[in-house]
Length: 170
Image 1 (cartoon, rainbow, N blue to C red):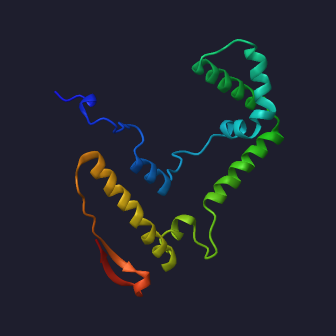
Image 2 (cartoon, rainbow, N blue to C red):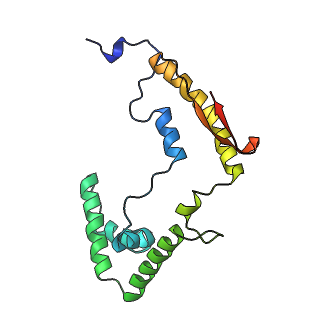
Image 3 (cartoon, rainbow, N blue to C red):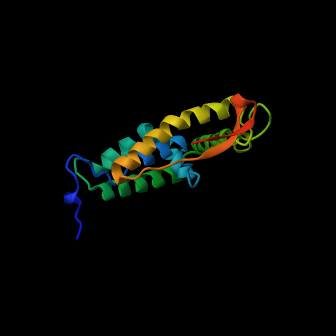
């Protein structure tokens, strides 16, 4: 049976966030899976000003567990949102509409951000191609270091510096 401590000394055993995971998160940020609800936006906008003092008063000097503290925050925030003035509620809704509009704002050509990603300039493509070389080199070294494997990566497509001619890089 193989155990982790049988490996060569000096090698780290990172399991949660490898170098490749960090790169992929940096290169392709993950979008939120859902929009914030009104009470959540209210909390982000007014927490320090309105909600935190009430929570501090209700908690007092008592040390709460993380779960109990989160429950207290949610309860107080929901209660305060329900009793909030119409003016504040409208400000929160306006902020939500503004945020949604800015996420889907058209660019200079009248296209949304999602449509704009389909139409990169040749310079943007070349910059992405140039940035891939060192990333893939480190990836190859990391695979060799961790697994003892050698890898080959073949890529091909139009290259802006070659007037859009198809080229293969290996």
